[in-house]
Length: 114
Length: 111
Image (tube, rainbow over all chains, first blue to last red; front, side):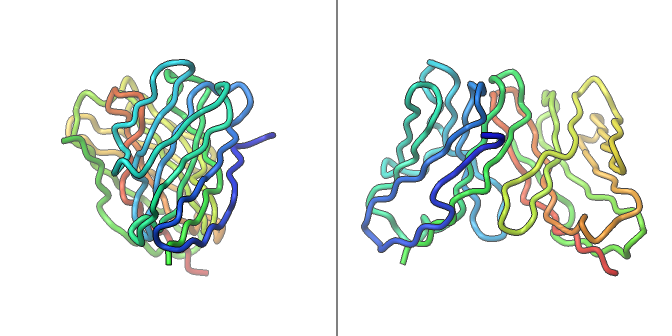
């Protein structure tokens, strides 16, 4: 596609359930990032993938959060045993490579944990 | 630690006037700076960027100024239009292959 695609656009879940968020980066982009944006706040870095290198997981807030990137393209962010404080917009971004810092963002997934 | 801060969380400007949004960063070794615009319900959209070897860069109606001495970055929007109403974020690369974002300034254009 022309841009970064994220699905679902909205997700409502019950506390304790697991959720999976999907990101389709721009074709040919080797770097992929996940950020979290709480209401009225800036963007909080979660995890970063670059090609076949080991991901930078330094931003993941707890071991309930994990992400993978299959075949160097699509990425899935998984949150296990969701808590109310996980409610936020989860944004995915991609860039041409790690040396090109200009990130292109998707529209995000609005996650609401009840 | 490394941080990025904005001076004003909100800013209101009369349509047609110029607006200036400011940002401060903590690490003098930062080499790449970028401004994003985020409209309601959308992801951040690239506006303009600048590297540390420059102190000014211009785009269409936008100018970014970088003052490395005081570690300050600003975004100037000329002749503001209603479509400029959004949240504006500055982001800085601290040399670790990921951008650190400020908390954003909500710009409101008054008709």
